[in-house]
Image 1 (cartoon, rainbow, N blue to C red):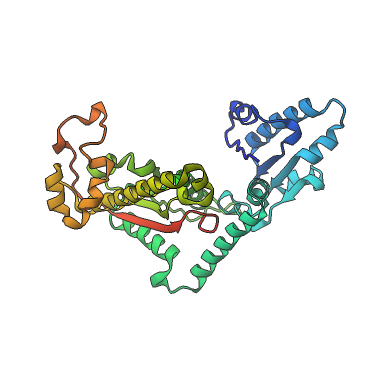
Image 2 (spheres, rainbow, N blue to C red; image 1 turned 60 degrees about the vertical axis):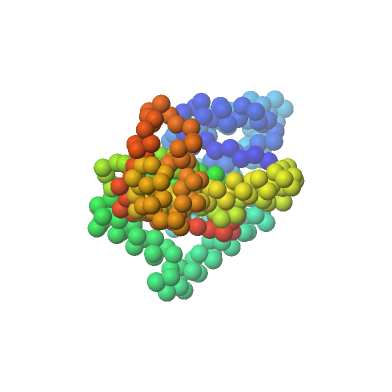
Length: 339
């Protein structure tokens, strides 16, 4: 089972998504959140024509579409113009892209690809976070604390943006998802009645690249950027399925490499907070012996790591002023429950 997304209005994206698929074993789910989403409907028409061209020789059009297409929408007008058997009308509270994950808009394709047992774990994790938010004291409430950190960085530190840097490959799309949620929840100019809505201007979400690829922008820029570093303590390479592929020695190597990544994760936070003075010895003196292990594994300040021609050859160019805000988000493992 394979899952393909066609979020782009470029017709080439739809062609690329179906290039190696067979119409007879393909199910197309079109998600239209509200009115005015003609681009998505146009992409759906492209896929509809592809299905009919591949399956329509001896079968009626209605039979093909009933078995191979589903419309999920929050537009009541559009829902009335399509067959009820092939349409799911989203409840009113979910008619916003940021909150469609736990409606049919996302659960249907996830169930088809991963199976309902995995989707149940995703729902259980969401319920666990809801219960945590409602029942936990604000002092230990994770959503509340993260919101207060963002408010502090924006209001008091005048942060120009929030650089989201995943140190786990499975979180590589998290920055894009976070930007989409923020755009949907904080970027509305009018309420449901059409009256102007209260405007908020949170810090812009910036993709920091995996494993701190863009960290020089944060360390050496004259602007203030808040950083959010994300890491899973357990590597997915140690899972039973991955261990079968890697073997015992390969799994040990993967765990050792992940340990180095954890060191780099904490070293980045150290340099953001305390800065560095360029040379390896000076970095160790500035940050103390407790962070020397992390710095030895940090690709950004490792003299032995490959350098771009733009980096120069002078070690003293690798300097950072410090006093940069950062938030560290650490989870035990990246699995369906955590996501």
